Image 1 (cartoon, rainbow, N blue to C red):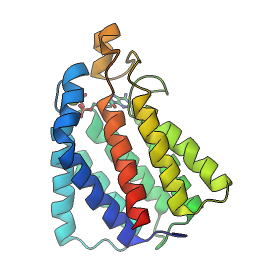
Image 2 (cartoon, rainbow, N blue to C red):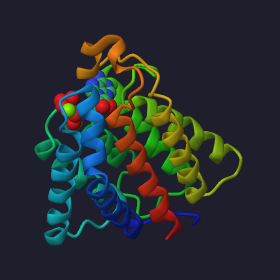
Image 3 (tube, protein in one colour):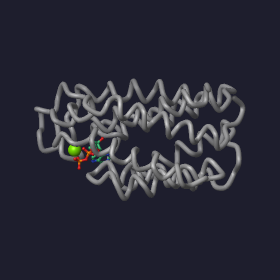
Image 4 (cartoon, rainbow, N blue to C red):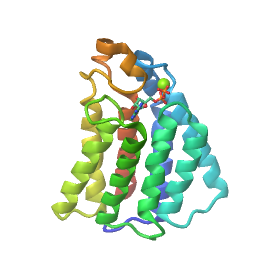
Length: 211
Ligand code: ADP
Ligand code: MG
C-alpha cells in the first residue's frame, strides 16, 4: 500500500500481541539462557494490557495508536525491555505526529525515531547483542527500500526481513549490555530475546501492511 492509516496501526498492534503470545515460551526460553527468563511473560503482559486498553480507547491516528502502546508498555512490561520498547513506540508516535496516513518516507522516519529512542535510552551499539541489532538493520533496510522507490509496505517488508536477520546475527555474539553481559562468553550461541521479539513486532507491522 502507498500509505498506511489507523487501521494498519491497529492491525499491527493486534498482530504483535498475537505473535508475542504465540512465542511467549520461546522468548522466555531465550531469556532463560542468557538472562532471567522473563522476557516472553513481560512482553505478553504488556501487549495484553495494550489490547485491553484498545477496547475502551478509539485512537484516531497511527501516532495515537503508537502512543497508547508506548505508555502501556512502559507501565506494564518492566525490566529492561519495557522502558526501551516503550521509548521506541513513543518516539515512533512522535515522528508520526497527527498524520492520518503514513507514506514510505513517514514509515522510515517512524522506524528511525524508534531505533534512535532505544539507542539514546539504552546506549547500546550494533553488535552489543541487544534489540538494537534488530532495529538498526531494519532502519537501514527501510531507508534502502525507500530509496529504491518502495512504497510503505515494501519499506516495512524490508525492515522486517532485516530485523529477522539481525536477530539471528546476535547468536554468536558476546553481550555488552543488559543482564546477558554478566555472562561473558557463556552468552555465545544464544539469540538475544529482545532482538527476536523486536523482529516479531516488525514482521507484524509488515504483515499488517500487506493486509
Ligand atoms: P530484563 O533484562 O530486565 O529481565 P527483559 O528480559 O524483558 O528485561 O529484556 C531483555 C532484553 O532487553 C534483552 O534481550 C535486550 O534485547 C534488551 N536490552 C537490555 N539492555 C539493553 C540496552 N542497554 N539497550 C538495548 N536493549 C537492551
Ligand atoms: Mg529478562
